[in-house]
Length: 401
Image (cartoon, rainbow, N blue to C red):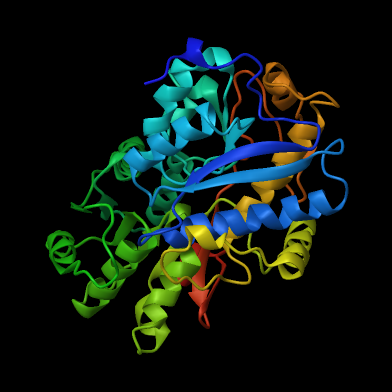
């Protein structure tokens, strides 16, 4: 491994013409929809900025690599981005198992001040010591998402809560969040079942359903990706485990729903029990200024993943929760780059971020950062399926009844 001392002096990733951001994400494999949608949302905003003069005359460029949602390729990609591609910062990484492997690299090269901005994960490692100083988060955490789901289920009398989770750092992060939330109410898990990362929708989750069904849960919280969670929801209905099935925002709600709809059955049969937490508001709510902006720019630019990264077919969505998150990430990233002034360098990045205080992102919740506050947003939203699409859930009691 190349040492920090071997990085050439002046390695900054910003020229007179552009600022280069590095992104490693899933553009292939069963989670490719997540990287694709996050990229599309971010590029809709960056394209708009670049078409209007960029940031102090510099275009924002994304240097992309595919990691397939696997840690080892992500580490290799990150080393290349830092040591060969001269990126200014890292942006928009996808997933806990990948991000947790990258954080020690950022600590090792901390003298070079290469920060990770707005990863698509709500896990704790990049939010707390020893790695919290090397990342900035926009989205609410998995602890907040799982606590919200648990509290709403318990308030509605659903006390026996089971967990289905991916057997890795992501799944364990969500599992720990559910357990902690239950502990605060004097409750325990009503069963747990796991699956291995990389499972496809065509795989069976019947064994996992049977494990949980044996404990007669009132609800199940799933911490996984869309292919595996859709398979679990399908097999739960087929095996008559017809209880509320909750998913975290990482799942990729639209991708999950599309897989269930492709079964050839009425989508309501398999989606009526779903309740998904989200970390951005509904893209259907055009009363929200940023949502109107997002929809307009997504339609105008309709960004596509570069052809060299397309290894499997993928049909993007006109709008999605993931692409809206990517859009908001890019909007805040642009504001931070603006605050660096006419001569951007990494030495000023932290100060630029910490100057963001009560910033209006256009979604109703204002964004603030500081030395002890490296997560910009705190709100968790909830959605259920009506007429084949996810809509905002306002009344848990009515829905659960």
